[in-house]
Image (cartoon, rainbow over all chains, first blue to last red; front, side):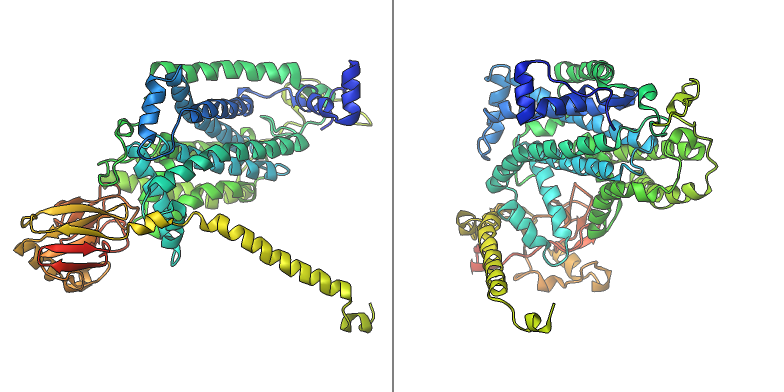
Length: 415
Length: 172
């Protein structure tokens, strides 16, 4: 989309630079003049919140790496050293650990917002797939980071997750030994996990760059799902409007982040991770961090190892296929009464799987997990394709302006 | 294009193909060490065997030793445990294997103490079959270390081991 104004360099230096590297103009067009639909609600502030969390995690992570030792006999102690001896180390580590939780909270809201308003639909498929790629990189980074403190949960999470690869027929064991650098999780594993945990966030930065690029090509979706028809009338410049709205959302979000970090810093953690890793004792009840629980529930719901692992990966990858599984011509859930109901059932199922992932895999919990898992896949493979064909949708507004009850846009020759 | 050019590749075509082939081999050779460095190193491979004095293990007890970073269970089985292991019809087992094929001496069961599901360490003398129970995802093993129920696909692995004497075994 073209902007509200074109950039004109004001100072002599800006003019000089602009002729050689038009970076100021690029920033101006992308983050100042960039037109934003004026009916965006607060759910659209999570893009900015996620950008903030990514930077916050990288900054706290880099300083923590200055004090952490990725060696099996020293790693656990170096975390306690950060907590007790390093200046402000406790704050930095708690901010980083809870930052991961907040990052995932924000990304889940961001994903569910996209699902409700049909943000994945034509022409935003590539934008959506890049988002799923970022989500998977986040999961990998979160898992690798959780191993570094070398507590009991770290060690056994590393063992269970790397053992997922042993399910691959014929070459599974060879691949797992290669991933671990040994026959079990040990020093070689910890060292490479640290190297990759440091690397992946920068890969995420690169993919986020593509994600934002794709977003700025198609323009943002909005609650009506109707594309912008009149840029002058239906959009506002990114700065100050979106910048400040994002800032309000961010302040509230950071408030929650600060409460977690300073008042209940171990709320999302697990006490067993304050016991140093012991390769000879598995804790009686191992659970992953809360943000992996729905997928963990799916893994455990299936009694066959290989099928369980396939279902786990399928439950994530299927999200990338949404643009083609949802056949409805109407983009926004606002105008899809039946979809709305199924959407909330899906939200309930996802949260329910999260709850069940934290319970022991037996009895009623196991049965419930199987039912919810079946529904999870049915939502994508049956409900969404059929809804698009049979649903009686409400009429979409002619334009964003019309949805806001404003006078119909005069059709200008150049509109 | 004429038939003549098709039949007679030029000097340039041959140089182009040869360079491309050499570049492909060179790229493979450059990537190989980058991939292979992740495999177990020499110091890990050097820890390949462990010896254990079994004379101090009373009947009914399980001793855990570390071998290649993993626990190995050495179980001095009781008469009932041996009988229970031997008397199961093979058809009842998810991964059928006779008890005699899993032990060298009936009193001594030696298995790698890693659940074949996702690598947790099962706890001894627990579960329906009094062999092992895995706390992670609920697999149960019998007194021969064979999988009886739960998501694990196969029996506990029997490592290579040898009786050096009546009281000493070498694992690996």
